[in-house]
Length: 523
Image (cartoon, rainbow, N blue to C red; front, top):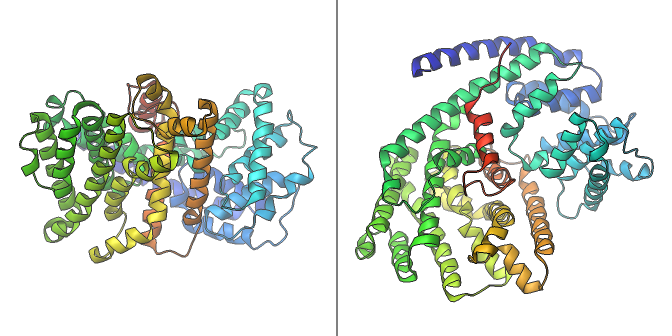
C-alpha cells in the first residue's frame, strides 16, 4: 500500500475511533457496581484503550478507592483486582488488603473456574510487591502452587490464561505486545460489547500503521548505510532491533524515539560482535580508546572493518544528537551520548580481558560490570532526551538522581539475557554469564544457579516498583520512568523463548508479524 493510501486509511481510522469513543463513554455511567467498574477498567487497559478514557477511568478509580471496607462475594478475586489497579494508578494500597487469601487457603478448588480466576488475579497482583511486603510474597507462592497444579485439568482458554500468568505476568510484559491476544479473549466472551471491541481493533490498527511507517524508514536507512557489507561477521537484525525499541514506547508521537533507539540497538549488536567475535585484545584496547576519546586517531592501525565501524558509529551518533538538539543544541547533547558509548565499550573490554585470561569472576564482580555491558545505561541515556522536555544543563544531575532506576532495569536486561543464553555460552565456552559465575562460585548445578538468577530479577523488580507506583513526580519524569521500565519489559519479551537477537528465532519472528506487520481483521 502506498504512503498516500496508507495516510488516507489512517485518517479514516482516526475519525472512526473518535466516533466510537463517544459511543463507548456512556458505559462508565451505566456501570454502578464497584467490581464491574474495575473489570471495565481492566479490560480497556488490556486492550490498549486507557489513554482514550483517562478522565473516566480516574473518576471510576476515585470512587472505588474511596470505599473503606471493600468486601464482596469472591473477595480474593475482587480484592486482588482492586489492589492491582489502584496500585498501578498511583494509589497507596496496603498489602493487608490481600491477606484474605489466607483465610480460605484450604478451601480453594482447583477445578472451580471462579477459584482459578481468583488465583490468576492474586498472582498478577503479587508482582506489584515492594521490598518487605511478605504477604505479597506468600500470595505469589500460594497462587503459583495452585495454578501449576491445576493447568492440565482446565479448559482451553482458562488454561492458556493461567499458563500466560505463570510464564510472564502482565506487570513484567510489554502491554502492547499482548493486545491482540486480549482482544481475541474479549471477542470470545458472551457479554462482550460490540462497540468496545470495534474500537479496540480500530485503535490497534491505527497505532500499528505508525509503527509500520517507522519500520519502513529504518529498513531504508539501514540499506542505504551499507555497513553490513563491511562487517559480515556481525548479526544483521534491523527488524528485531526495531521490535525491541518498540517495546520502550508505542505511542505514535514517539516515532523519533523508536527510530533512534533502533539505530542504537543495531550498533550495539555490531559493536558487541566486534568485541566477541572479531578483534584481538590489542585491537579492542585501541578501539575502546578511540571511542572513549571520540577521536579517530587511535584506529589508524586497525583492520578496515573496525575503522568503518567507528566512522559509522560516529556518524549515527551525530545524527541522533542533531535529531535531539537540532541546530542550536546538538553539540551540548553529544557529550552525554559519547560518554555512554565510552562506558559501554569499557565494560565490553573488561569482559574481553576476562575471556582472554580464562578468568571467571565472582557473581558480584561480574554484575558490577555487566549492568553496564547490558547496554541499559547506553539505551536509557539516549531515551532520556526523547521522553519529554528538560533543560540540558539538568541532564547529568537527573540521570544521577535516577541511577537506581537505570541500574535495576539494566540488571533485568542482563539477567534475562543470561538466563536464555547461558546454556549455549557454556557449550561454546564463551565468557561467563551470571549463571556460570554463580555455578562456579557456589559449586551448584545450572538449575540451582538459574533459580538464584530468577531471584535477583524478582529483587530488581521490587526496587523498580517503587518508581512505578509513585504519583509525586513531574509529567516529564513520569514519561521517562515509563519508557525506562518498559526497557525491562522488552527484555523479558525478547528473551522469553530464547535469544531474540541470536539465530532467526520463530518466537521473535511471530511476534514481529503479529505486532508490526499484520493488522486486525475488521467486521
